[in-house]
Image: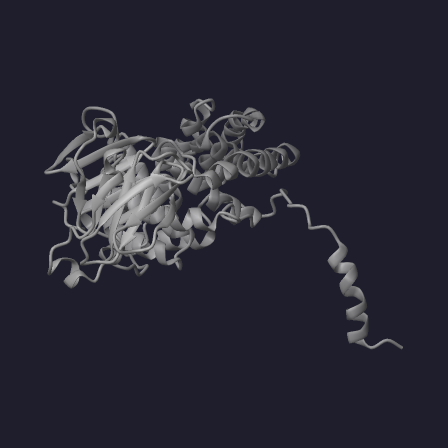
Length: 455
């Protein structure tokens, strides 16, 4: 007679031979399914009971019947948290007239149906459902469309199970795994706007909450780099607006910044922290976010601010982060964490300097002079193929304990180069996919450097 352990050992090869289990796109969770899970709803109701600053501002705008930028989202959220069925019915009335062809409105229709179905009543809820149903056939678009398709599929999972499963399978397997993941691994800029980035983070939450699928799988480095990249993508000087101050992501177009993009950027960061509160990079991001001057108070931002922010979550001071980011073919450098610091950015072959409150376009082809920011020196090929180390003066950067780092821009992407430093052995370095060559040197030593393409 076989013992229990012997039976188990015999079974192990059979278990190992079984193919990996197919993902299950059938939805078993109860409504509300979209973002407002039990834990988050409990936190938001606690914020209401405590009369937090975010709740007070959101509640004041809703009670004052302010013209909210996203009325479906705002009414459904306020009605659910404040137990105001009338607001939920108003949200449903709005959703029944909204345009599902617009990805932003489709998202709101799905949220309203998911959060307010019971309060709206059967007849009105069915009107909203009819708005959502055609969207289940959507099979193209950017992150906003795919997020909204997933939202519609999750909201209608009980009424349209087959169409829902097919839509969710498409979002995960055809769009994310076959289209987005390969591009992210190549370092491509998949999310062209901060609105698309925010949509991606909403999708992360919705799929993990309902299908236990973590889209970050296989993309650990990309997601680990995202928080520092976001923090360093802002100009150092904030932008004063009537409702609050905004941190402004770098942009290329002339004129004043798009404050809607700035708001989406902050919303994406708040949602990232909520997705994984333990990641160290997210703790720096939490320290960056929890400064009340930047709390979004306007008709657009306050709903996101109230929904995602968790002021009780501990964070780390972002001033302990490195003040430069090099990766994905991009270079972002600050001269320090003060708001009057200089800033330099380079990506997609374009360069920009922010100095004394002004954006300055830098033309690499014009062979500008090297730009120095503390231990970092930025040079432009071909003139930057010869330079001298030792640009830090004694006493700077903690008695010269920091490495000097040179970034040579305008090199051939992926090419290898021989680097000669006086008094040292020649070594080889490779330019990244953006044509950036990074070189590090011992501090406090003056030496000539010569760079040439490897044979």
